[in-house]
Image (cartoon, rainbow, N blue to C red; front, side, top):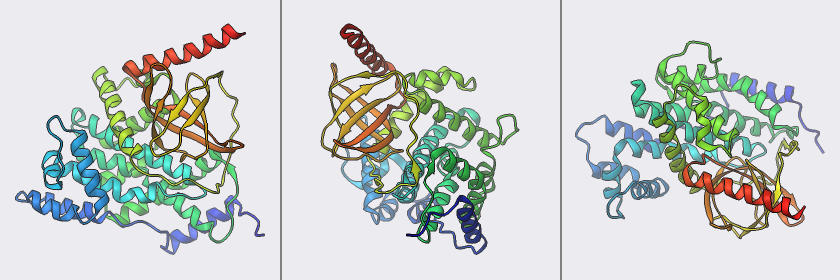
Length: 390
């Protein structure tokens, strides 16, 4: 059996691929390119847009879905009606996200990290679009910057997995893989920007959005820094939810509320997309000291899966057990069979085999309003029940 490669070997192989210009970079989404070209024509028609979109059934279905999710009137069923309702800008956004999503959601030894990067990119795109107007930035430019700013990391992870075709990857803690990726992703991102001939403003975002907070940045780059920070806070403060965004003084109250609504919209989008589940992984299971948790026993339903059983709950996470795995690094929609039932978007933090099938740790995402009240009541109920038994 071939021994695993060292990180130095992986790094050397990646550098050689970059020098030889053979690192695999996905093409800029063709449907988005055609739609952008049409959008520049002030006389374009809905019929012309439909002719482009209908060639990709997945994008067409997503367009109809977006039109109905945003609908205040009667449901629409045709592609032409859907395009008329959401407009060319949102259609281009869907085409970009769907076109690059196959790379972002693919399985592989580092699949959980790639999916998490793509999940954050979809959130960043929507958040940036929401915050852009008050910062005198074109929303469509902000969306694209959010979607693409970390795509170098997605390409880099895929490149690392190409190395695995030659020699097995080492199994390392996620933090070590993240540090390795952070060291190289800007270089790969600039290669992607050049390959796609992106505008200088977007190339600047890719090159500088990881610069320290005290480094002066262009307005678009500063916006992406802000939305990245917002996503990190929401991920870290699952139980606190949207209220944790108070940590960002640049956001006013209305903007924090708007990001909470936007997070829900993106959660629905992500939960509707399929994501691969790994059979092998190069990420070492990190056994962190658990926060205080309390036993529970209620059913948890996940669309298109057999039912799961919740086993423990803590202020920021809960654990479920079931036969089927869930893709780590992805958002899913779940319904908790407690009283009252709760429907949440949750981030799949980990999924590990166990005698009953799979043990999965989930974290609520962007809690707010009544959902947060019910979540806190569920936590308090589990805590009190255990104290009463004791």
